[in-house]
Image (spheres, rainbow, N blue to C red):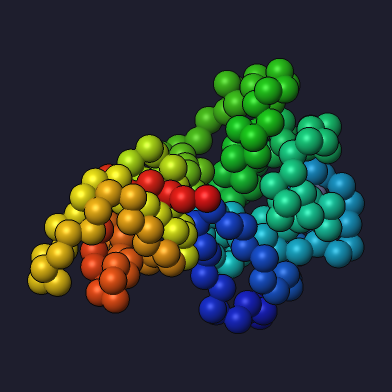
Length: 212
Ligand SMILES: [Zn+2]
């Protein structure tokens, strides 16, 4: 068996894998010339790693057509009828196909046929964990928010909402002080770093307001 994947194809949470789309012969044979998502015949099928697995194994991938690939990359599910085939795909014996079908049917669950297919679907425990892993990864992501719940990003400017006693530097930064170009403390959602009067200090997010 030939493996066409480069091996450095890590999945980033919340982002569909967009890297090289070559397809192994095994996967090609499994798909038998038809997109495993929409069912359309295609001679240019590509491997798509089902999040949050990476494309290091055919078992983690579905073989999809170019139309489906585009929709998935853009997270565009507006053309619900394109995905009608999922009603059958959710019963696939291939876990990757089943899991991808489940994830997509969830995106389409406003459609009654999709909701019905989901109701009838059966995923075993490991398949269900796989299907939910992308949302779980997203939920685990550390998000920094200001005192009003506004999401903060690196480089933002914030204003202090309280007088801040800057320990070590021995001064008080008054409420309303502007802190430009903040840095987010990576493993702590409650802390950012910023410069006040030349000193870089850690500031609690609950004491800042994002400035426009
Ligand atoms: Zn397709």
